[in-house]
Figure 1 (cartoon, rainbow, N blue to C red):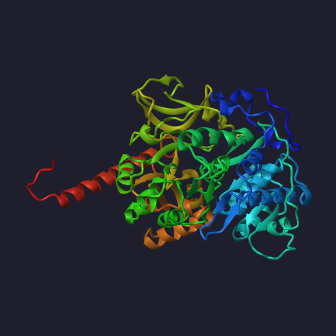
Figure 2 (figure 1 turned 120 degrees about the horizontal axis):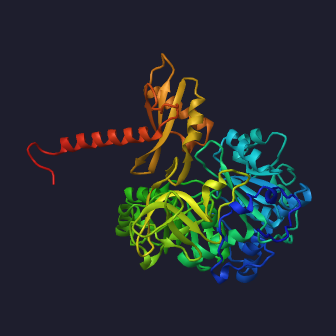
Figure 3 (figure 1 turned 120 degrees about the vertical axis):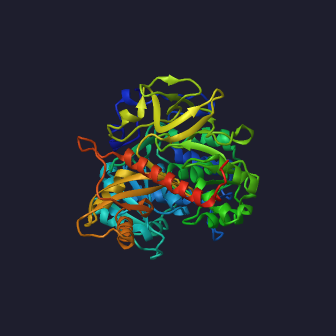
Length: 564
């Protein structure tokens, strides 16, 4: 596959792209997807925006009412680029790891890394040192930038191999270990590196169904393409829109919705470090937000607290990250008048590729292929199925799966199609309806959680002999992590032991991955060769739930009265 001359001095990412014959097909069917050969996404998103919309336009808000203008964001991202290149010797193609909650400095750092021609690796601040160590080993960053509140476990993971800079501690103007201090010494004048449109700009780790995460690779043009498809055609933002949402910027869902989309269209974004659903809605309403991104779980929680009024100022509410049921859609519509924009995306594709808005929405369906993409249903042999069939969701567009040096590339790309691991149905009008995850991924409250990673963490507890983890349906979160655990002889599986194991997992891996449902068993189902049979555990849960529901129904039905 022909690629344009790279600006990267450090050729690590280009050297570790998957073989060309394993890439998905790429299509650029819209005029706006034809980008120049030389392209730096950060220069487009901030420099071009300042020129087009003015330096004084608000760019980033925080819940306390403070604001960074486009001019301030440009200056600080330039300063970050200067610190990286002038002080730390970062050259184009080097990787820079970011760690922090959603706040203005993480956005400035993200833009500054790209301006310097480096490759950004944004990570979840909740990850523990073992998880960060794995990502460092995979992506080999030379510098890590961290919010000072999340630096301890990063430093453990980084050791002496990666230079760590913090921000936000306020340690003084001459603190060499603080990014903001160093930025204060810089002019804020920086010309973005003249990268190629197909130079790697972003490495996005994704939760996998094995313990080793996959790392997706995205080009400078890809970052713009997800704005010029889903955002441009479904959200149709203007410079007056205010974006808000719950997803972390380490998720490409959050990166698009809270950074790339607003900057691409001269809009602004409310960055909330941490907030429950109602607090998020309160902050969004106070800031005059017009576009909100969050998971169905959050919308249900807001309605449960009878605070649907907080959403009525929105122009568009986007639901993604997990399945949006028809019941939730209708409840939100009834309470607020909003027609939730459903969608499915993937880290491999960068953002949403199936959706619908306005009068095109059909409640209960995910939508149709977003302009710029086409989607289909495949059978197990990779053949396209016609309307009315259930099968594997597959998509082709201007973005696509490229894993960093990972044999699992062959599983995701089938005959040019990106096969997402979801089972869908498609009707005659091209509307797609979600059925289930095809693999062993648990999607809980919008978080992707790989069951084997949780199993590995539980196994480290000294009282655990073995365990198996599955996802079980949950009304509030979509799914929750359920662990079946065999304890060593003599240990009692009671409520205290359950909580002890849950707390242990929270200290071992990111807390949101812990098993909310823990069931102690004497043995786990295995086939004759010894392979664990997760499907039997799922069947067991379904059978138990059915029995429980039937028992509850019997208790609620008066004697002698038939059920309709």
